[in-house]
Length: 306
Image (tube, rainbow, N blue to C red):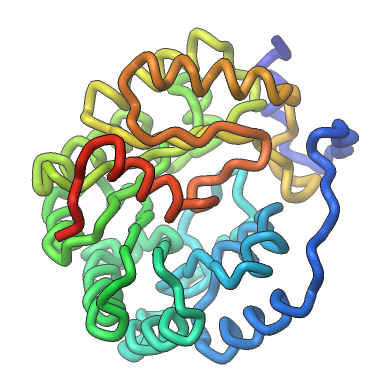
């Protein structure tokens, strides 16, 4: 296993050559262009673009997108994330309505709503999340809604605000193992993120909680197993595991690439631990195939949509 010291350089570094299993053909661009026009017209950012997600061509060609509310400027500087760190603008009151309009025009059946970290706001942006959930519900009653907030400062009242708007899935990413969290997510805390998932489950026991892990940053398999066990201990039932890819030379460099069969092994371990919804693979991201994962979880658990 590569040394975690590969994370320490702050300056540019040369990107590693991608292995063959991380290369795939791009789909036709017609639907991608149409989705881009609708998203652009809404004025709501997408994490697909801002985080330079490798799944953008595939998802957008199928008219799916993960919307990023509260602007495109984050108050944190995580070493894996390509979203701009800068002073954010105030929340826009019409953003929930614009988001709901975009969701309706894209005819989404499962909506992922995420956001930049907003440590500058007293409620960490929770009120805007709740308003967006309600606006989408009013406009598209058949769509299921997944929220993916930052850690909200671990504040119970902020988590409660989102839970009271009744999303169908509450997602918060652990991102990496405990040892690497101070390096990869210097303004976050591993135990605080676990606490967010625990509190969300307390407020809404019937709502599945979900989390995501990146691998390839220098973690060990035992550390991954411990992270999975920690997630299960706070009631998390859905997990995604994907390969970390360096978005720019200035970000944390890749310690190693996991082979496809290793992702299969991690999925089997997660299943043995009791996770009911699992996606594990090189291209898996927290919002990738989110609708399919959610509906698979519902079928396995007997959960009925309210």
